[in-house]
Amino acid sequence: MIIPAAALAEPAASLSGFTVGVTADQRRDELAHLLESRGARVVLAPALRIVPIADDAQLRAATRACLDTPPDIVLVNTGIGMRGWLEAAEGWGLAEPLLAVLARAYLVARGPKARAAVRAAGLHEQWSPEGESYEEVADHLRARGLGGLTVAMQLHGESQPEYTEALEQAGARVIEVPVYRWAAPTDAAPLHRLVDLITARLVDAVTFTAAPAVQALLRTAGPGADAVLEALRGDVLAACVGPVTAAPLRRHDVPVITPARARLSALVRTIADELPKRALSLEVAGHSLTLRGHAAIVDGELRPLAPAPMAVLRALATMPGRVLSRAALLHALPRGADEHAVEMAVARLRAGLSAPGVIQTVVKRGYRLPAT
Image (tube, rainbow, N blue to C red):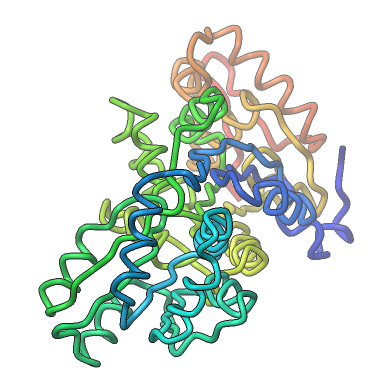
């Protein structure tokens, strides 16, 4: 389908021609819809799933510990965790005493979802970090003084020993409250496919809405994790919903974009602002040419291309005016291709662009984009 210039100028087409991977499980459909409403092609590949542990002995023991020794401070990390804790307490007949304990504590809600869950329970948070980071929480609580105090920390899917230790070193007794766990997706095939797409540069961006999803992606990649990180450091944009989610990638020296506010809609707007800036644009044989992920914009009209023709176009566009041999272009094609596949890709590219003179054949040497 060809998208004309007038449509490309609209927000609904701001991501047309780009492919975005989604690693979220919860709210993945919402995120996919937001991306598709701006024209993106979406690859759904949940990296993790949330497993509630309402009957878990650890959660019940932590709840009893909070009732027996009411915490002075309660750190609510996630909305789903807060709701799950109260639902589990309801099932045990402990909801009212737990709410009473929480109402007397200094409540810290780490982000807007946690804050909403606190208020939905009829409680009120005393403080929330502006940047939603654990470091801000630890600094704030240390500044208040933690000596001799008890802190109940609702975990974000798994234990976070570095933050527990930071609070304990400041003099606090910490009760870890595990409400849910991260588990591998029921079907791992989509995530393996996303790993392959990232390393082949066949997605333009990958979104992350939880820090553990980063580690899950790299674990799935196995020996190919370095290749995934290399792609994310260059051709594939890493987009995270907030700084906490971005932290594991930044530890691997991956540049990350995050929205000013940790919202899915804001994340999509940030991607829509950033990806078009990364597109390569040039003038060729009197035509305006812009390369997006799986499409070219020719004189203002978006023309989707298959992976092989797009790979040839991208290789030629990086060196306009220079002749690339069939053997050189073969390296740009998917694995298993031969020189005949190069000729087929060039033929399909010319047909897809519908722009005479953009792809030139240099007899016995190869192909080029004419320099302007």
